[in-house]
Length: 107
Length: 117
Image (cartoon, rainbow over all chains, first blue to last red; front, side, top):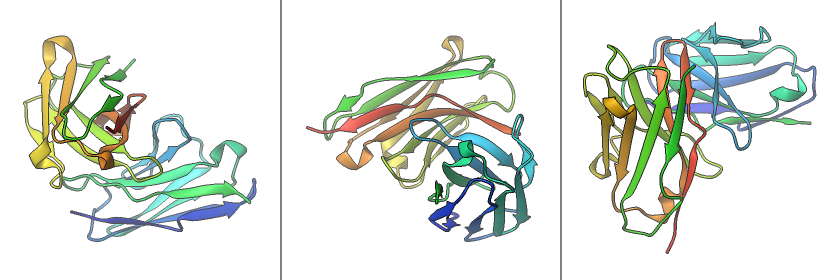
């Protein structure tokens, strides 16, 4: 089973700042890595698939990069609605697994 | 428009079997390549894929829970059913039904299942 490790656990930033979130896989997942945003009481929402492709309707301030074992989600300038928990998930092989999440909170 | 909705008990006792039903619309589980699965999230914890069933009845299970899980489909009713045996308080979680596609994943709203005597 591939383990995904996200860092940091919590990111304290102000609106307008840049957020950089990391996801590291215990073995290569090629580019089969997705990023989700989750707000309290809601199901996750897909932001990025295949490491760098924005899902439909996702603003351009969200970008993803990486391949193999190291991936990054960048939010170029935080909007008030971006403060949430972010999860990475791979689909390289079964079982698909998630990271433990990074909480982006208001500083 | 694709929608999924979970239904089932909100409270189960330890050792009981949980049965959850996902009723979906906007796609067919008889179409090649289509799958529907279940994901859970204990309060404040990480998401976990539990099981996945495909149009051809191929099934995948979480290795750590495989002995307790069964996933089935009823194509005519547009439903997928998950059963989990021998429930324990650590299984308390929000259970989501999900439809993974290329470039998107559609989620149900989730249902909180509490395991307590």
